[in-house]
Length: 164
Image 1 (tube, rainbow, N blue to C red):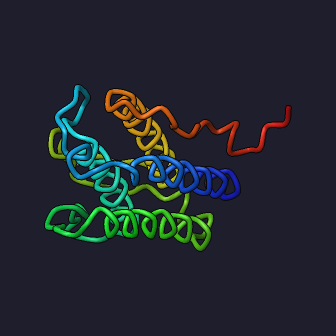
Image 2: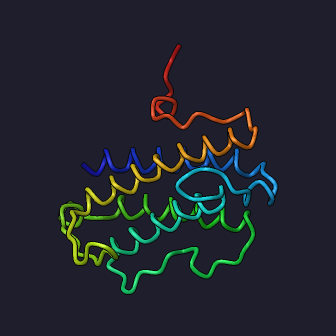
């Protein structure tokens, strides 16, 4: 299972970097323009991906309390991109160094709406990747709403190096 999780962690980092490359070309006004999506702006959508993965990584590391990375963040977009990239590396490192028993372990966490919940580490890690993919798709739609036409593919098959 570790090999599969590492493969997805590497894909997730690759896909995040590709979408960041498109987002890095936006102006501050574009990052903060109100658009139709789960979160009202590109910046808030990107921060949501960062927050969610960060919260889950802290839970996997058994941190308490967990603190959303963007909670008190006042840095620049470039600083966000650095933190976001580093977080992806931390998740890869977590997977690479975790024992098989740790990956099969069940964590318990407090969900704001559901109360105390449990999930295996493996399922939690897969959820992080799926959640990021979902919101990267929203970012693609938001980029199109902003008139961006050069949007890199973040499909897994592209990551694997599909041959023509």
